[in-house]
Image (tube, rainbow, N blue to C red; front, side):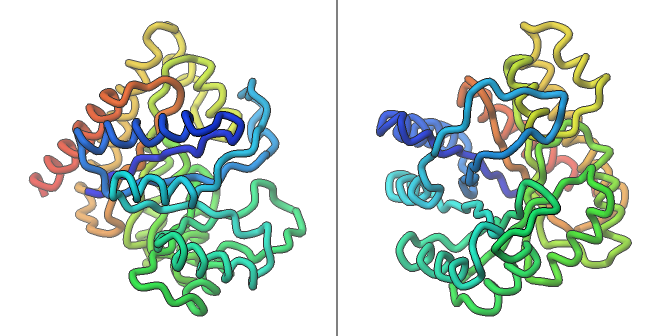
Length: 299
């Protein structure tokens, strides 16, 4: 099972200490539970995607993902995959960026991302167009192209199938807190008969109701009843979030086992938010891997 840890680039004004703090967290998790890769998002200023959440801190420019990736690889030897929003630049600049990212940074895994708002006349290509452009015009040994999927979005299976046809190898999901939207997506992919090779499910342990409200601001889908349960006891938010993540993963892998599906391969993208101790991430990673191995043993 593939296990990836998400590392958010620090804000530029925080300086070198913040960069070192991010790398130390990755190092502590990797030393205790080896990672297959580090996933680095590209953060842009965006409007709220839900009226339910809130973002208390204003946006601030952050370190470029590929700069952080190079620091992590140089210090820890871990391969990184970086997210890149493709709609902000015309196709020639996108292709130049991909070539430069491989030649100067040694990065060969890209998660190509669309715009945060629909109905905007973006200067760059759509995600399927970007997949095809990079696949056809960039020569990188071992190139892997990923996209992001939103399991709760209507028509997502067909949308993913079109991205696979355009060259996507794998997907990372929006943060998940319940299994039903994703198991429904798996059924839809089976009907499309064009499932991606791999999907990494994003799980985000949280410590406080404020953390959860920020996820809602980002557009993470959390049913009202589940939100109420997660936050009914402020001191128990962390424990409940971990319990729900394990329950969600169990529901997904049991669904795959019941239907005897080998594709897509399922992995996890751990994306802790707030002051989550590295050991908590390690323990969660071990638990999810053990659950997956047990499920495979029961096939």
